[in-house]
Length: 430
Ligand code: NAD
Image 1: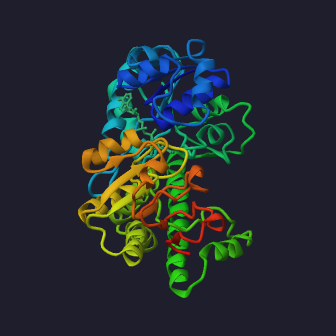
Image 2 (image 1 turned 135 degrees about the vertical axis):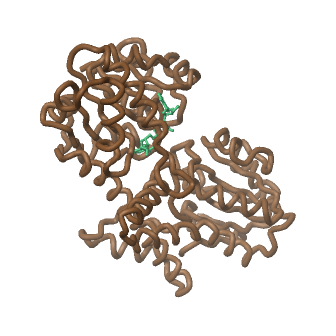
Image 3 (image 1 turned 90 degrees about the vertical axis):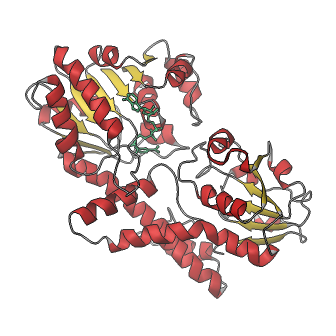
């Protein structure tokens, strides 16, 4: 199959690379020339394990990158829409990238001969594909969905950090389509995947994505709330999580209590679902609580830090980890943002270190903090260390160059058993 992918970010580039690795001919498109240049030089513009290796194999063979959307759509049979769907200030989804890309694709479909399917992979609130994408495509192409071209919604469930593995071996593939022909067309690109394929209508496919993310976010806020209670009762919530996770109805996944969820998906997707629910006069009580718990959770690390280390003003504080989770450079909605901003507001001198996210962090914090090149450099001379991301390299850190060895762990990232006696260690919920 000849495939074009519009938007070459975390989802688009993985989709493009994954399909190319499976033998399809892929053209990926982005509005940012520097991303396109990097891809064509076989260099991933984002950090994702294994991506550079795939790009080395496929770029110049069956994967090319361009800023020319027209050329990409004209030369392919199927177009995946993978542009961003960020939050508006009120929590609703900002559809400007989806609308613009749909207009551009529509104009190309006007001139293009032969069958074409447009597949929405971006996360969009139920109703968006039918009420926004299809009308924009029809208006700009002068053609009719179902008769002249097909539309499908194929949500993406990959996790950053293990994105390639998730794309290649998803738990399920969901395809919601305007008609059977369009759905079959999309299913054919997944030929060779061993995952179950679920065919639905378009709105259901959109909702499956939101319900999945909302459920996972709920699980995290739930265990964080249990963790906060455990902390006051002197119980290690990780032992509790082990005990409940053995129940197959609960499962052990997503029960790592800590400073809350971040990233480009959970916060914005839960907010968007809350917004939609309110719009249709539903009160999403659980989802509201999920967000409320998550908003307070990052600052728990500072409450504990203040109790252990006293006033933060003037103190050198090492912040270890900035990315919203390990194995990514993504800072979007990272709990580190609230923590670092509060430290700065309180007058602390922050020395931060992250193995991959420093460049993205600089765009957020500027020169308000210092950026260390290693954990040791950040810890040197510090009176307090906060563990914000569970990078594996933090597991057995050496704290001997700290001025005062007070460590507060927001992720259960440290191997407590190997800590020397002179390190004062405390976890957020354990
Ligand atoms: P991203 O911001 O990393 O990438 C989006 C890309 O689209 C950017 O490179 C941007 O320059 C490009 N773009 C915007 N308008 C364009 C246009 N008109 N033509 C061509 N390119 C254009 O976003 P992302 O993290 O890849 O997310 C994309 C979508 O996938 C979102 O809806 C998100 O919710 C969803 N999603 C993300 C993840 C994840 O882990 N990141 C997982 C599942 C689903």
